[in-house]
Length: 415
Ligand code: TXA
Ligand code: MG
Image (cartoon, rainbow, N blue to C red; front, side):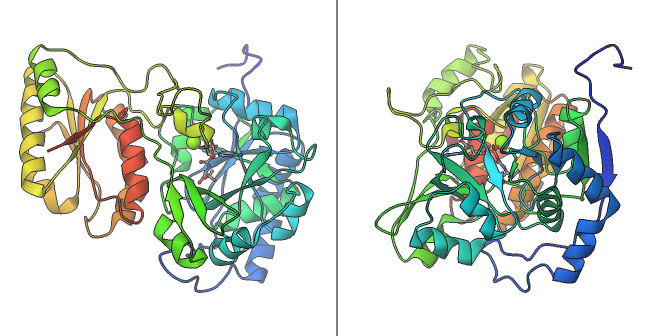
């Protein structure tokens, strides 16, 4: 089909069953680590061996982790790392996370691990925690760190990811395996949609569990830490383990919608700025001249093609606002969608073309695991105007609201 296109790659797909995760995500104590015998079996699995040999040869293979699917390449080879940026269409000043399977691998490319970093590794690795550490000069492709003197590292809590790292013998640079600006992939199918023909292989290990990316953290000399990107590991858990202050970097450009101005705009029929265009455009959010501490935070991510707004408020007020906005959108001829908590679905019966459930309000882990697939579904259905119920920024709710806010281009309506 694409035989005439020299950049077209044959993307191999392998279906491999995982060992199951250790559950080390900060919500519960890990019950057991991956059993050594089973891990050995997985490493020797012919499909894992084949995928690993491609990685060892500098090729690109997507694989499941407990957060989202990652697009892996040897972090030491610039050609591989450049291939990742190209396949994703990712801006090159946004550094990548390096994935390891054993702590002993750190020495090769990290200069120093502080006592606070050690504490966090002890408590949360393998798991959805990424630590920003001083990089050993010359050890990794400079493209991985985008020229910074630090490198972001994590040990994923997923048997297939760990087996691939071990079998390939490579520290794997792996951003989420989506085209830049698309929601991160929580299924191998999502990776295929975005990257088929652009990468060398995809290991399909079923759904990623957590559903949002890892929490990116930098510790400080006082034994505390700063959360550079909220994620699957709640910040509250970090504070509990460190016994010191954990600060959150406010990442969102504050584009809260002023209800009066928004009403005026919608009455005037203005469509407003569309989210997600252009791909990965800088969205601001830092003081002028201030370097973003997690470079990825300045980009508009996770944007569906239609216009998304988040509505935050008490149940009745939020539902009323959402129904009103849907009616207006319908009148404009929009194809509408709602993303709502299970307990509130009754408010939206027959009110939108597509109503998708976020899971129970009382377990925000469900919302985290469903969010990206729902955003993709809206795209598939051609929704042009979508409203999502917001949630409290507690626990993993912080990551859910962060991603929803990004997908909405910062349009959060408080009612
Ligand atoms: O869960 C995850 O973290 C997934 C899976 C595949 O492991 N990976 C992922 O990678 O989300 P990516 O590349 O999409 O996000 C990396 C984030 C970006 O926000 C980036 O700016 C930040 O980590 N980052 C990377 N290196 C950094 C550094 N040296 N200092 C500060 N932030 C860094
Ligand atoms: Mg990403």
